[in-house]
Amino acid sequence: MAFEQLKAGIALILEEIEKRPEDRHVLQEELREKIAELRGLGMPVPEDILRLEEELGDDDSDEIYDNLPV
Image 1 (tube, rainbow, N blue to C red):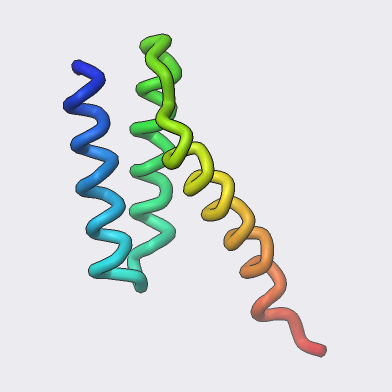
Image 2 (tube, rainbow, N blue to C red):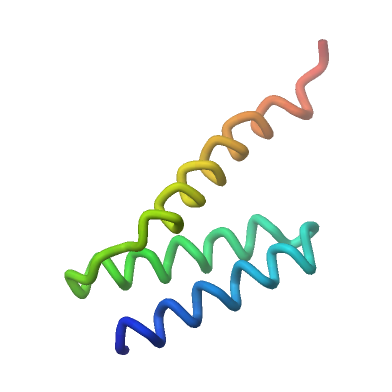
C-alpha cells in the first residue's frame, strides 16, 4: 500500500474518532495498525501522527483506574 493511501486511511480513522468518540478504543487500535504498517514498510510516520499516538496512549493509562473503588 502506498504512503499516500496509508495517510488517507489514517485521516479517515481520525475523522471517525471525532464522529464516534464512544468507539474510540476500537478506532485507536485501527490507527495503531496503520502506523505499524507505515513503520513496517520503512515509511516515515508524520510527526503529527506520532504526537497523536502518544496522546492517545496517555489517555488510555488513566482509564485503567476509572472503575476502581475509592
